[in-house]
Image (tube, rainbow, N blue to C red; front, side, top):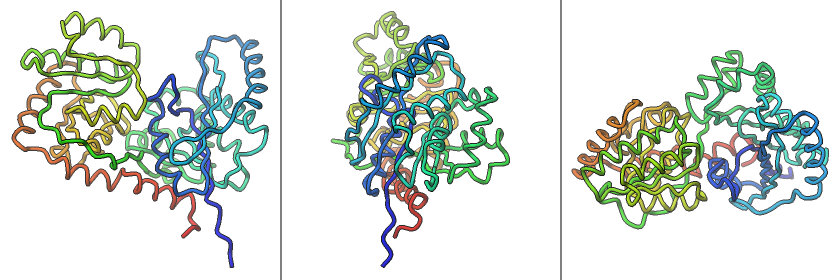
Length: 401
């Protein structure tokens, strides 16, 4: 009788939630939570970039010291879905180019492994560089290596000639190459048209299993989740909220995340006299963020550009209407359920597009013009844990029943 093939797997990633940055890599955490239960074992290798200003001599000395330390200090701890996590710092000189970063992650992962290959027949890396390259260089010769690309900054990656060369090799050598949305596909096909037939799409998974305590009745409590940066549109969000709050003082906004605009926005909120109505709590753990989704009424996501927009799917899963921009990913994700899920608005450099969109959505919502149950059912079929996990298993373990 033929023995069943092993269903062991490993994940290599530069992003995973940590105590200091609980939001970063939450989509990788969800992918692990979705897929680990169907594996015999799953180990996550998180190469966490620790960036500092270092000259070449200092960089060499710090990396050597880190290699000795990690050989003793790196250990496995439990993580999502019954998987195990090996977290290790990747000492990174500030300003290091993407190709050099990939080789850096390759070396650090090898140090942690003690020079041995990753002991799994399936290795799945998140983002082509650095982790796709690091995974391919450290996998067993017989391993099947898959890569998922999420990065919205591929244009910057491809400005580095070494990165282009390494990325081309990743696409050539990987068993399968996956993307989470059309903008990523388009960027890769422009740069590597000879690999276009290798690119497949599997989205990030989202849990639809946690019910909301009670349905939304009005859109008074706004929620933003993401980085507090210019390209996320948060400056216009605060100004739009001020306009709407002037019309309805019962409105509240919670703006969750870290970034260079957090302090300026805190000051602007004070200038507007909205300190009692607007909260900026910084980064919080992903579980707490999901809890906020189930206690707020409206998810506002005014990003300038998104490759997928996982937060948007999470918002629908949490039973929240959406006010989001057509910024690349959301209009694809919500195709066919735009009105059921909420309101899509154009990307405009002003506050009025957001405040006008809110007024339209609120009037329509109160008149019964949304259908969140229909939106949830459609998105769960495409992005739910079970759907995404099965898509991965078909690739990872093609010989398994």
